[in-house]
Amino acid sequence: MHAARNLRLCTKDCVCLFICPTGATNTETGQIDFDKCLDGCRLCVDACPSGAIYLVSSTYPAPQPKHPSVLETLYSLVRSKAAQEDVAHSVKEGSDDAALRQICTVVETSSRIIAEDLWRESGYIIAQSEATRALLKAMISEHGTMEGFPRTEVEELLSRLS
Ligand code: SF4
Ligand code: SF4
Image (cartoon, rainbow, N blue to C red; front, side):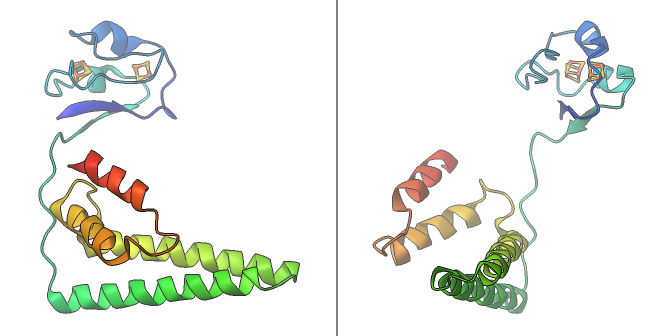
C-alpha cells in the first residue's frame, strides 16, 4: 500500500508534511513520493484534517476471466459503436449544416466514449495487462499499414507498457 492525496480536498495546512517520518509528502507539488512511502504506514491518513489522503494498493489482481459469450457480446457492441462513430464522422464531413454537424459531433464523441467503456469492461481496464499488450500487437498486425492508423503512437505505447 502507499498513500495518495486528493488535491481537491487538500487545504495545504502541511500536517502530513510534518508527521511523515520519511518526508514522502510534498505539499508544494501535491505529490506523495511512492518510493519514500513506508508501505502505507497511514500516519498521514489519520492526521489529515481534511480527509484528503487515502491508501491505495501497490499491486492489483489480474482481471477476472469473462465467459466467451460475454466477451463476444462486448466485442460486437464495440464494433457497432465504432461503425456509428464512422458514420457520424462521414456525415459531418459531408455537410455544411451547422446543426447537423453539431449532432454528428455528439454522436461521434458519445460512440467513442461508450466503445472505450466497453473495451475496459472487456478486460482491458489495466493498461499494463497482458490483454492490453495483446490487443495493441493485434492492432499493429491487422491495421498497421492502414491509412490514418497511428502506428508510431501505438508502437510507442506498447514499448512503454512492456
Ligand atoms: S494534512 Fe491533508 S490537508 Fe493538510 S497538507 Fe496534508 S493532505 Fe493537505
Ligand atoms: S503513509 Fe506514512 S510514509 Fe507514506 S506518506 Fe503517509 S506518513 Fe509518509
